[in-house]
Image (cartoon, rainbow, N blue to C red; front, side, top):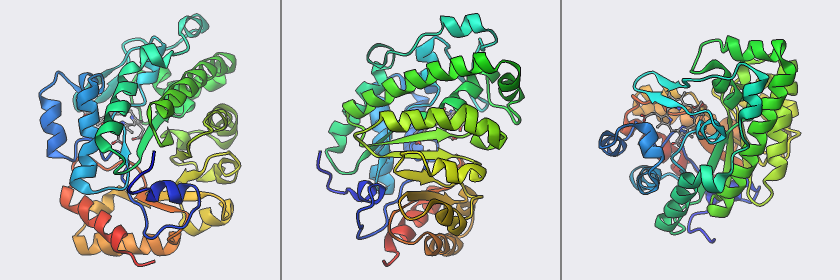
Length: 342
Ligand code: CP3
């Protein structure tokens, strides 16, 4: 489909842009009162994710309210374990919780490879609705968790500071670990292919827990599965966001992704040097900059762009926007990017 604003696709595929595209990870969510109003009408987060009309509506809110250059489908990375047979809950103010976690090979064998058309049809319906309502205004980003990050929640059962159960599993039961990662990967490939068929114009893989692995484990248990996903998605550009994985940048650069996301701790010029000119970079303002004055937000944003350059670049934060961020601060960030002269 032709887009009225295709800046993000141009940047991702290395075409020249007339201004820098900008969006925010976690833009569809709690920073917007309009989101909270819809969310409060429902029993909870999971119901919102499973109601395509409302998921599509909150997907488009940031395009209307913040004027970002892309929408990202409102969902969660944890719909994959659920589709494989391991359901999750979202506990208010605490985050995800899995009543059952994976401990044995028997459990891994009982999990199924997700069939997106049946198990995840609600996400695909939300994508189709969002595309229709966007009517080509901006591209729509589809996403999934990286297999390692999804694995971490399936073993741990919730968020954790150390993810020591999940990391421990890699040492204790490498075969079980690879079996589970394989099943997650097959599920994710099918899911992302369905997302692109439903209309997603770009795909982002979130490896939020990349940074807690030692390098050798990252190269064994995470990156090969990410590469398989990148290779399987042929028709749209793929972004890999591996938070905390500065240590594996040269290897991430060898995957077939179009864009690499940087977190706020990564050094911009050093990363560009490691990757060479062929990849598009995305990121990486510290989300905490948005707690500063507008003047400082603008100054930090311009300094970041000075380091990235204006081509082969998508402006974003270095991780998801924090829920207590003021909408005005977000707008200031977006305006500063848009007003940056090439
Ligand atoms: O980016 C967007 O705006 C689209 C929506 C989106 C959500 N989750 C909605 C959500 C995306 C892209 C995600 C991805 C996701 N989910 C990741 C990877 C990105 C990252 O932040 O590292 C991870 C690790 C998860 C798992 C998850 N979901 C956690 C740990 C939590 C609780 C903590 C938190 O950040 O809120 C969630 C809940 C969640 N996912 C909410 C939203 C809007 C908040 C719940 C609510 O609104 O009730």
